[in-house]
Amino acid sequence: MNRHSAPALKSSPRSFTLLELIVVIVILGILATLGYTQYTKVVEKGRQAEARVNLGAVRQSLIAYKLTNNTLTGISSAYVNLGTGADEIPSACRATHYFYYKIATNSDYADICACRCTSGGRAPQGTDMYNQSLCRGFVASATQVETEVPHGWYLCP
Image 1 (cartoon, helix red, strand yellow):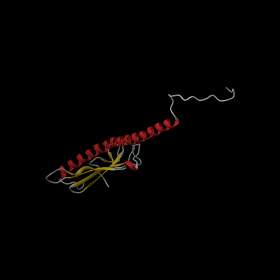
Image 2 (image 1 turned 135 degrees about the vertical axis):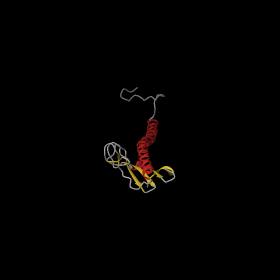
Image 3 (image 1 turned 180 degrees about the vertical axis):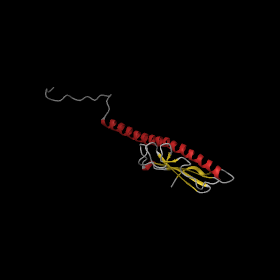
Image 4 (image 1 turned 30 degrees about the vertical axis):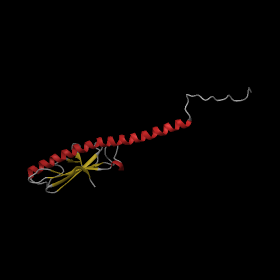
């Protein structure tokens, strides 16, 4: 044996090749990406619970107003507790909420919408992917207090 030659590398049956390690890392990266996108969808769905609760509160106020006045004409945002005050349902984005809310009424119909804040709202802000409005419409007639608009909750245009 020559004293100056490098020792021969022995192949161990217990070691992984570089190619195998790269394949495993790629697979883990793909799984992590899929998991993260599903996680963000579930988290955003949880944030929509805020919108559903506040839309329900506004809806109850609108029904009470309709029963008292027999019309929805002339209802103010203050009556449904919608405004910019700290104890009001926000009509503009603020740091304590993920959504801001708006209503549109005529004598017998109301649209109540919760729109995702994209700036000025509670962090994290909505992205284009989750920039949506959650609305509920109802018809309040003289004989029937509420009739659901088909499909109940829907995305506003």
